[in-house]
Length: 115
Image (cartoon, rainbow, N blue to C red):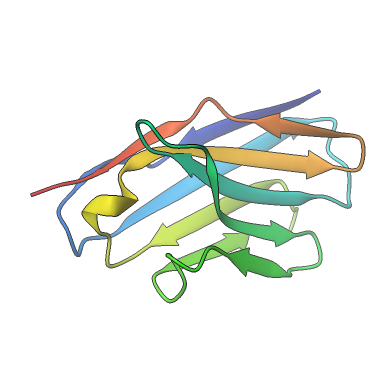
């Protein structure tokens, strides 16, 4: 089992910044992919950004140039720096840890972009 603990969500004005963090513990494999997904009210969960244990990243087109995903050297934590936030970024953001045999989700953290 893998446990994920997220932090960093909150309320921010349009154009502002937030940094999300996610720490993984438990049965961590050296080869894995961690990332962030989000789900807005009435919409399906969608990929925001992911990063492999080798450092390869992938972003949704809607966040390219504004969001940056990174992870620590131990490969157990992942971060999402979100800049130039827009109201349409409002959603619950979920951390995901994927290894070869299973996928795990955090409890989600609310991000609200509003003036």
